[in-house]
Length: 83
Image (cartoon, rainbow, N blue to C red; front, side, top):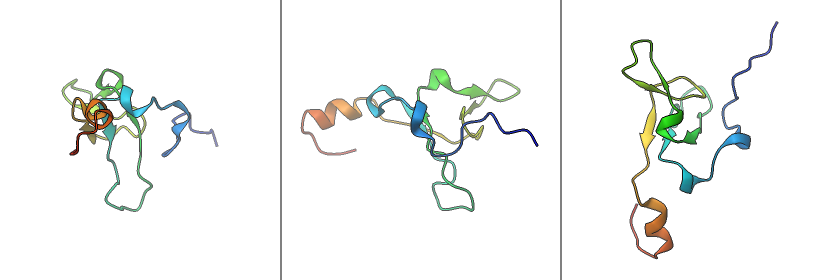
């Protein structure tokens, strides 16, 4: 049986630092049967569905990318509170 070439969930070996990311995948974060995906990166790295309309996580291929608010790292470094 051939091995999968897809990255495995929670494989952080190729993930950029959080401050370089503008989205992350929330697939199965609610405690489903599978492990959460955990991919993070930039929307420019995301895939597209067959029609080219929806963004897909490059790791798990789900439509579960969540935008990280802009300025999230700058605010924390400046000592501001909030998310």
